[in-house]
Length: 193
Image (spheres, rainbow, N blue to C red):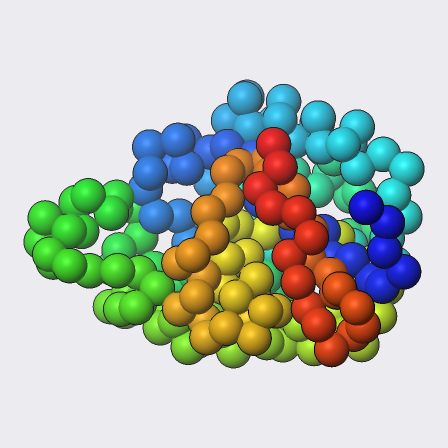
């Protein structure tokens, strides 16, 4: 479906050892697996022919390398606000292990001790949305799952906790945009792999 309004393409990085194992990977800068690199290369064909006024990447090597392998490394701008959630003491730990020690814990509600709250991540997402709206053109963003989920919630006018309603696979493409005019932000496509 074609649209006259700007679209924002969100790309989750390719697979890493920790995304495969389910370990929370915030600020630990681990590389893509061979499968993650292969999936990142397929993004070039999936994004072929699209022109972007801006290409932004998280500072993590997993997002930046995905951007390069997708064919957009020459035009990328690193934006610190696109970094994944700072998981603090939960860095490198699976949700299952956290729940064994803290029953009922939910990332999007409770945040992380020694790391960021949902509101902290939401504030970063709001700054990115402001930059997107200033660009007023097609933008391509490479980042990580939980941050992109909060960004999507904020795009739709939901509280940051609304990110819990979305799921993203590695090397997926999602598209945000508008419906009838610039006052109606929507999800146009989601989690395409």
